[in-house]
Length: 345
Image (cartoon, rainbow, N blue to C red):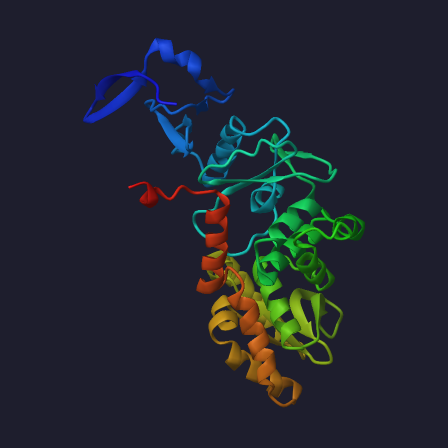
C-alpha cells in the first residue's frame, strides 16, 4: 500500500509524511506501531510495511519486546510466538544464533502472513498458550518441537537443558508431543533422552555433550567438600571414578570480580585431592582432538578416531560451524517465501 504524502525537509533529510486523507488507511497499534507502507519521522522499520517509534536509547531486550508487540499488527489474533523467539521470551539459554534471526510465530487458521524477517507455521494440535511479558507464547514443548525441525542436535540440546532446568518442560509434556510423530519428533526424542537438566549455561551443555560423545562418564553439578566436610564449590562435571573436575570457562570468567572469585576457588581446591581442568569454546570446537587425547590418557584407554568424527559431525550440523549456520539460514530464507526479482527483468 503506497500512501500519498507531503514531502518535508527536516535538517538535511527528506521525509514523506502522510497526508490526512491517508491516515485512515493505516493501522496503528496501542504502542504507536504503524501498519502501512509509510515513512514517518521518528519511526523505525520492523518488517515490510510495519514501523514503530524509534527507541535507540532502550536496551536490546526492550527493543526486542517492542518489535514483537509491533508484529502483532500483522499476525492473526490467535497467533503465538514459538521456536527461538518463544524460547527467548521464556528466558531459555540459546545456541550461537546468527546476528539476524527471523521472528517465529504459529497460527491456527489458514492466514499465515509471510514477509522477510517473519516465519509463520500452522498450529494443528491443541496446546496451551502462555502470556510472557504481555506477549502470547506457545506451549514450551511445542516450542522445542518447532526448533527441532530446523536446528541441529547440539543447538537443540542447549534449549532442552535450559527448559528442563527451569521446570518449563516435563517428561509428560514431551511425551505428548512425541506421540504425534510430527516432523522434529525424532530429533527431540534423542536430545531429550540425553539431556542434562542441571546444566546452568549453554557452555556447560556443550561440555557435557562433548563428554557424552567421547564416551567419558561424568556427574554434573557436584558439591565439592574438603577433608573437614566444609563446602568449597560446585563443579560443572566430575569424571566418574576419578577426582577430576572438568568445567567450562566462558567469557564471563574473564570479568574482574568473577576472576577474583575463581582464583579464591582454585586455591581452596588445592586443599583437596581434586584436580580442576577448564575448557573454552575454542577447545571444544577447534582443538577437539587435543582434548580427546587428554581424556584418553586420563582414562588410560586407546584412542578411537570414530569418537572424534562423531563430535565433528555434531558440530558440523550445528550453528557452531559455518556449514551448519549456512544450512539453517538458507532454510529460514526459503521459509519467508522470497521473491526472485531477477526473473522479472
